[in-house]
Amino acid sequence: MFQRKSKVIGIAGIAVAVIAIAFAIYSVVGSSQPTTYSFNDTSLKISAQFGESIDYADMTSVQLQNDMPPNLVKISGANLGSILKGDFESNGTHLKVYVDTSVPPFIYLETTNGLVVFNDQSAEQTQSLYEEIQQRMPSSSK
Image (cartoon, rainbow, N blue to C red; front, side, top):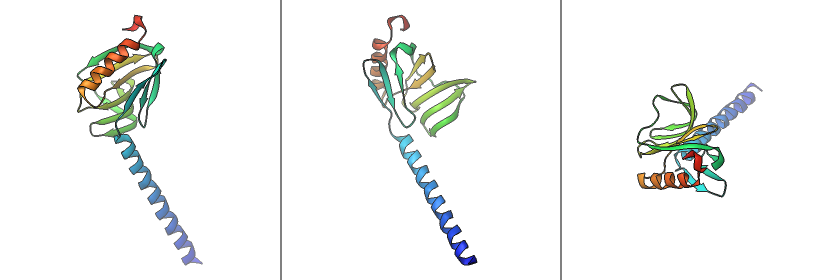
């Protein structure tokens, strides 16, 4: 009877370890996938493992910056070298981040829900994304 319990406990331990490893691999692979952006009639959709949709009406200002916010600390999400996605803090201020820090510039989009910082896969793509957001924002917010 003791051997049987030990065997069951051993198999359960292996199963838990396999599940944990599979989840870790899924998280790393999902987080390292490039973020994609799309526009519809009412919102900007940020597609990533920790993505979101931002209504144009909620956008209050947008800027293009060459530097990331200082002193970033991850709250939840991914921090895989130059890939940052999820909820972060910068000097006590909460923000959402979807960036590859090795590919500036960065779009700083202020919304009614807080700051969102993101970029695309190249400087040229980020510039185009920035211009598209400027065109779609409420005219008083630009």
